[in-house]
Amino acid sequence: MADAAHTGPRNASQPVTTLREWLDRLAANDRLALIQAGKSLRFDIAAIASKLDGRQATFFPSPEGHRIPVLSGIVSRREWIADAMGVAPADLLKRYQQAVGNPLPCEEVGKAPVQEIIHRGDLDIGRLLPAPIHNEHDGGAYLTAGLLISSNPSTGRQNVSINRCHLKGGNRMGVSVSSRDTGAFLNLCEKAGKPLPIAIAIGVDPLTLMASQAIVAMDQDELEVAGALRGEPVRVIKCLTNDLRVPAEAEIVLEGRILPNVREPEGPFGEFTQYYGPRGDRFVIEIDAVTHRRSPIFHTIIGGGTEHILLGAVAREASFLTTMQRIFPNVTNVHLAPGGVGRYHLYVQMKKLHEGSAKNVIFSALAMHHDVKQVIVVDEDIDIYDPQEVEWAVATRFQADRDLVVVDNCRASRLDPTSRGGIGSKLGLDATKPVDAPPEQFLRIGVPGRDAVDIEAVRSDIASGSWRKVCPD
Image (spheres, rainbow, N blue to C red):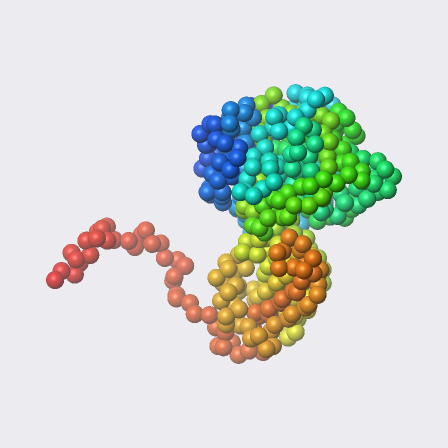
């Protein structure tokens, strides 16, 4: 598993720049589980990875005897993502905001590890790559962690997204395209009767993976956001069969085309909602070449798992916070709650200065993205990463007759099983204290010295089962 570009260990406080360096760091902190060889690609990998979800990433050597190992769960905790960025967890969103606002151009190279081995001609993606089947009713094996890279036919500027790709046999895959940019590029190509060239990069460093989800303007290459997160340009290399540039340090790259005016059945697939995205007629990719390292690693994201949810949540949080703070500088933080599958439930923390301002914040937050269906606004003293704290704020600072906002017939997520063809209702809860409330009305209880207590220092040397020695009959 040697890394051709690795020049030695990096400081643990520095951003990570390769997947293999990240695996070293995960292993050093007991965050990587090496699983027995030979596990089945059908459900075994997903079952084990799900069992360890949020505790350890999982590495599967020789799945079903396949020579390429499978990896999952590499960014399944917020603390890990912050670690990969080289910042404290509290600075995670700030660092992401900075990177989005200050993209760093890529550095093109002529030779790269990802093109050490080349496959062309009669390709069978299912035989070449160990793509697992995750959930019971999934339509088949999927690529779930590949960065789909395309470019604007009008400007040549690249876009990066993650799209589920359903292996259909041979060199064909179904692809679900919901991203704004890729969809716009496809529309242009279909009008011209031309295919859209694409590349799919599998096995990238965690920061490039996170950058792929950045909410940026059209024609802003997310690989440049990755460079800013890493503190150095992403090294890229030109594809063999088209003009796209892909990460040079990736493990695997598939080069191909999304066909114009062709739709075939794809799905169902276990989505971030933890329900199935339905089967339907969707775009088709034909792969022209596959390149990879001499000993590549195949990354898969388990549908509906923490890694899946966090990838989208952190990028959206950073975007929402940037936009909201332009209008409301007293908004201090936002969080897309895991219980809302990292998309639907948004918590907003603010320093309330005027009555009514929390409702203005609610309306702004509901407009951030059509996925957001519930917003809870809380005061600065509430930890928005603690669902019990947020629930307590609702229980003690919210009254439905004056603090509830309901907006009907809004655009909603099509993957929300309660929406009506992508139309739904939105809910806002103002769980902030009244500005003019007397201080004693909302004074939180507190035990002096509690935070300073060192439990191990005050614990008795006597075993707890020996309490009767202290209080005999």
